Structure formats: C-alpha cells, structure tokens
Length: 157
Image (cartoon, rainbow, N blue to C red; front, side, top):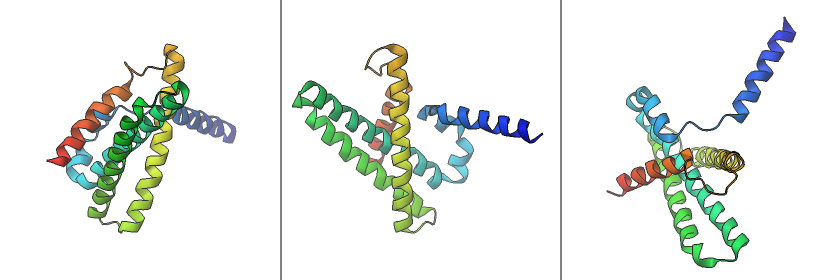
C-alpha cells in the first residue's frame, strides 16, 4: 500500500513540476469567486504574474542584446524593468491592503515573482524547443502580455 502511495505521490509531483502556467486570462476567469471574495489577494497574484512576465521579457531582451550585439533593444529593457517594478509595488500594496505588513508583503511578493519569472523562462524554453524557433508568437506568453498591459493601463487611470 505504501508503495502505491509513493508512486502516486511521485507521479503527482512530476506532473506539477512540468506543468506550465494557466494563461493569465484563463486564471482570471477560473478565479471569479476569489476575485469577488478576496479581491486584494486576487490582484496580488495577477500583478505578481505581470511583474514576473515583464522581468522575463527584460531578461529575454538582454540575452538578445548579448547574442546579436544590437543595442537598439536597450529602451525596451528599461521599459520592461520599469513596468515590472511598478507591477511588483502594486502587488505588494494589494497584499498590504489584505492585512499583511509591508516588509513581509515585499518579501513574499519578491519571492513569488522570482518563482514566476523562472516558470515563464521554463515555459518559453519548452515552447522554443517545440516550435524550433526563438519566437513566442502563438504562446500563451503573448496573450499574458496583453492582459498585463490592460491591467497596468487600468492602474494608471
């Protein structure tokens, strides 16, 4: 019996570690209840994802600059980093609004963003291998960019 439980646990763990993010738009739709009941926590997660996505984008552009020696992407890197920082601050403020202390909120948000950035990197690499290209068009990552752009624009108003 213990052997069966161990096999099931290992199978579950391996499926969790290889599973990619649910596209942000799908996450928003799937979590309508959380959005209604705990909007600050819901928004914390969404803006953590956005911050991670912008950090991932900045890192990707920096790699492209190194690879191609083309510095024309520098302004994009600055914009992505600026937006990532703004989304991180927004995420932390929503966590504070839900009752967390600022220092703990900053630490928690930072850790989650780091983890989410790694997930975006991992998913992008899988997509690159699958499509045999360095282009993410057709990936959920492009759609996440659109969602995050709308979220960030809404916060500016």
